[in-house]
Image (cartoon, rainbow, N blue to C red; front, side, top):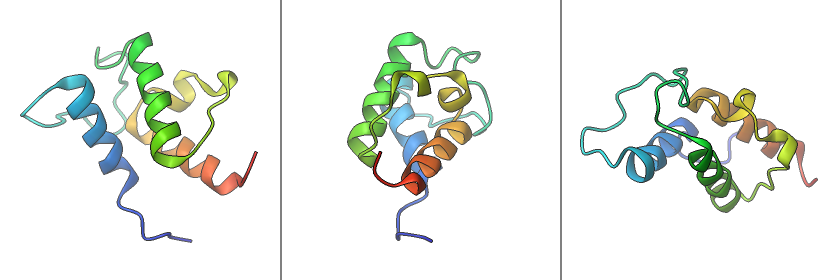
Length: 90
């Protein structure tokens, strides 16, 4: 059930590269690499990702969803967004 949206992983990667890595070299990590372990994201960065998800995908992220299970890699974050979009209005 595609909504003609660009690749979610690419959008997340672009946001992280521009807003957290400040890198012209791009995102040189795998989508499954831990953003926390790699030092890309800290607690403030997680909150930036929560804000990004809310603004970009119109998803309200409840506090209990802010966990490494949902926000520790591009793949996990993309999966979380897809699950939330499929859940309909909360």
